[in-house]
Every structure is written in C-alpha cells, then in structure tokens.
Length: 173
Image (tube, rainbow, N blue to C red; front, side):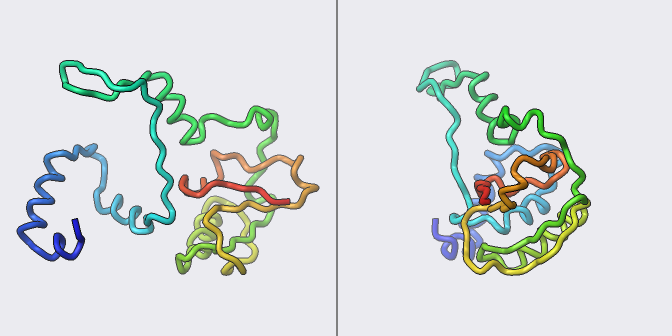
C-alpha cells in the first residue's frame, strides 16, 4: 500500500477503513485520538520488534493457529514491561526523585524532546538541571552517573518515568 495512492483516494481509503474497522476491537475506555497522538513519534528508527515464545503450529476448531505456552508468554510480557528485575537491585533503597539533579540531553532527531522529557520529569518531582541538545546522536536512552555513585540507591521505577521501550538503557560511568 503506497500512502499517497491509498490515503488520497477516497474509495481506497474507505475500503481500508472498512477492513480496519472489521478487524479491530477497542476497549470502551480507549481514546483513539489520544492513542494516535502517542503514535506520532513512531518511526522505523525507534521501534524494536519482539516475538512471543511459541510452540510451533497446531490445528484446532479455529483453524491453523500458533501454539503458545501461556506461562512462557506471561513471563515474556512481564520482562518486556519491566516486571523482571535484576536480583542485585532487590536490596537497593528507593530515594526521593527530588534528592538529585538530572541533566536532560536530546540525542535523537526529534526536535524538542529534551524539553518535553524535562517537563515530565519536573512534574514527577525530579530536579532538572541542564536541558539541551546532546553533542552526539544516540539511538539509545543513556543514563550516565559517576562511578562513585553506582553503589547508591536509584530512583524507584514506580516513581520515575520509563524510557520508551524501544530504546535500551545503557549506563556509562
């Protein structure tokens, strides 16, 4: 599907919308406009695709299906959303987000990302220092802290905003 050929042709667009409407189910509380606004920054360069663990293919009353082990899929999903954690962090103490200062640098190609992220961090109680464009581009979210601070407690994942799942976190010291 070429976007210009489909999106600018009302007949093709109507057929596309009809097909999407027939195969899409949404929760009643889902706001499609809010969802669309969250998707505006998505591009091939900032997506990572993952495949759930499977047990091959099978046939059942629905037809040919991909067989899965539910507990393996649940463990996979838990790992993706941050449920699985490093066991060495289990004894780490949670610190107040306002007890240290964060510098927010935009290493992406998205204009204004540092300012938007700094605003969110401030709303969550973090102290924000420098907000600017990074000297070099990076496809990953990078969290840097001095080597001497590695043994100190980290902000709780429950109180700190998670980086976009598509960008792995790396630490440099």
